[in-house]
Amino acid sequence: MIEPRPLGTAAAIRFARASLRSDPAMIVNGDSFVEADLCAMLAWHRASGARGTMLCAKAADAGRYGRVQVDAQGLISGFVEKDPAFHGTALINAGLYALSAALLDEIAASAAVSLERDVFERLPPGSLAAFITEGAFIDIGTPELLPAAGDIIGGGW
Image 1 (tube, one colour):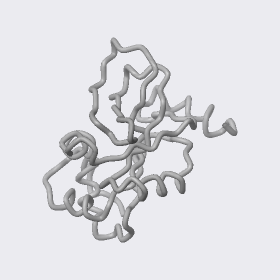
Image 2 (cartoon, one colour):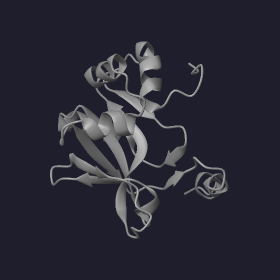
Image 3 (cartoon, helix red, strand yellow):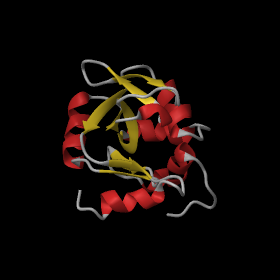
Image 4 (cartoon, one colour):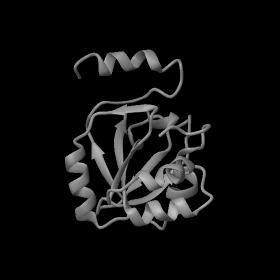
């Protein structure tokens, strides 16, 4: 299924909702790569009882990313906007999600454009679980970052 024009992450889900038949459905951003055990993520999602699960990666210098705050039970308690002044390791959104059919239906019925800002940040704390991977992560969403993808994808990890 191809978008008629770039729709935004939530609007793309609305566009594709009728084709998403599993519960939960795995949603993947197209501008990042992450190494993770997706079967373990799905098991974590089901055990958590959360409406959705976000794959989170540890970034050594997380200032260029929004940060994910996770509580002791592994549920997402909040988000911190990008802060170029922040230099340290933190959990970030790796762009892969397991979302319940009910949450997908809510997204489809909404006018949300951004999954991250219009949906996730507005959910009550604890609505989403975090599945944390120690695997390789790279954001390839800008031309200057794309060449580094070969080091991870082509390097055999």
